[in-house]
Amino acid sequence: MFRHTCLFLFLTAGLLGSARSQGMFEPAKDARPQRFAAGFDLGLLTYSGDVDKGGQFNGDHKWLLSASVTGQIKLFKIGNILYAHVMATAGYDPLKATSNEYDFKTDIFHVAGQLKVEFFTRSPFRPYVSSGFGMVFFDPQSTIKSARIEQMYPSYRGVDKSAAMVPISVGVLWTLGKSMDFHYAFTKTLCFNDNLDGWVSEYNDNFQSITFGVLFYF
Image (cartoon, rainbow, N blue to C red):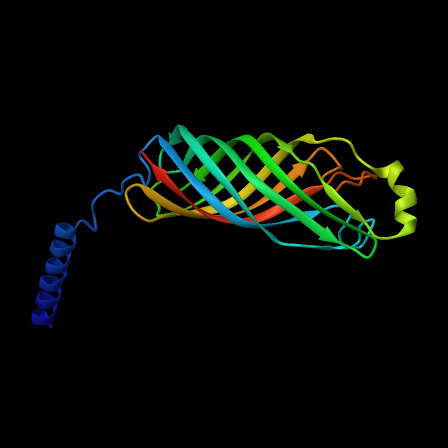
C-alpha cells in the first residue's frame, strides 16, 4: 500500500511539473488586449412587413445576401467579466417579397453607432450583445399585379426614402489567433417607417439577419 501511494504521488508530481512547464497553470490572459478592431460580415436577411405571411398581402419573403463593415474602439473592461466597445457599422441590406397582388424589392444602405458588450474577457468564446441607433436609406421598387391594388395604391404609396432605426444583436465571438476573431450573430433591425416595401398602412416595417464575419485587432 505504501509503495502504491508513493508511486501515485511521484506520478502526480511529475504531471504537475510537466503542466507547469507547458503553461497550463499560468494565470489566464485577456483574449483581446488590443483597443481597436475592424472587420466585415456576410449574412442572410429577410424582412417583416405588409408583404409577409399574415400581413396586408400574405406574401412570401425572400432570404437575400447582406454585407457590412465594422469598426470598434474598446471603451473599458471590468476584470475578467466584460469588455465594452463603441462600434460603427455600414452595410447593404436587400429586401424582397412577393404576393399574388403586390411584389417589391428594396436596396437598403444603413449606418449605425452601437454599444457592444462582450462577456468573459479571458475566454476564447465570448458571447456579446449590441444595440444603438442609426439610419436606413432606401427606394422601394414595387410591382402591382391586380386592378384592385392599382386602384388602392395612390392612398397607400409611401414617399419616405430614409428612416431612423435601432439594431439589436446577440452573438458569439470565437478567438482564432492573436489578432483575429470569427463571430456569428442574429440581428433584429427595428425601423421607424412603414415604407421599406413601398406600401404604407399601419405598422412599421423591420428586418432580421443571420450573419457571419471576422474581426481583425490592432
